[in-house]
Image 1: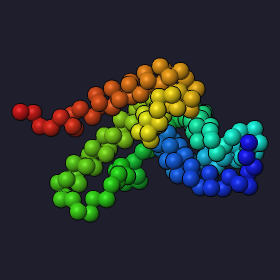
Image 2: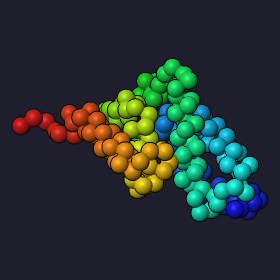
Image 3: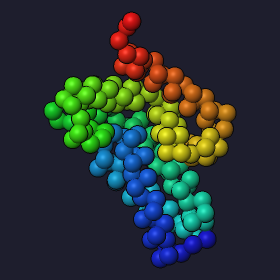
Image 4: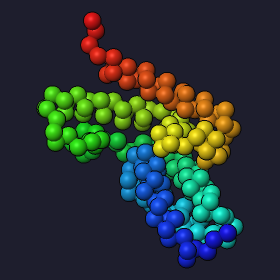
Length: 174
């Protein structure tokens, strides 16, 4: 049971992860920032009810998950995961790469982005949480499912991504 005034360090420490997670679900950084801000406002208004320093990240990510799921279910897909030029945003600094490597990386990045975008919301959320280092128990708590169901979500998401990325990762036929 914390007072909002002494939670600024907690907010600063958790905000980058929360925004990155929301952006991965919404595929729009500005919307993600808005959702996360709304979630922080709601949590901080009830800081006397929750122990945010101990359990706040799980509570925050659950709120962000639900807000993103709600937002995604209310709108049609009008936004592209690609930039205005039709290319996926770069995932790494390629300044030291050869041009052929850049083309392959760009193609793979676009395939990953398309694969993630094609996953159902809960599978994408479970996979993103797992990639952020959360355990299945934590994923279950954040998404409001059983630990077994969290494992199934991660497993299915990985399987779908593997199937979609197989042609890009297997290399040329021998």
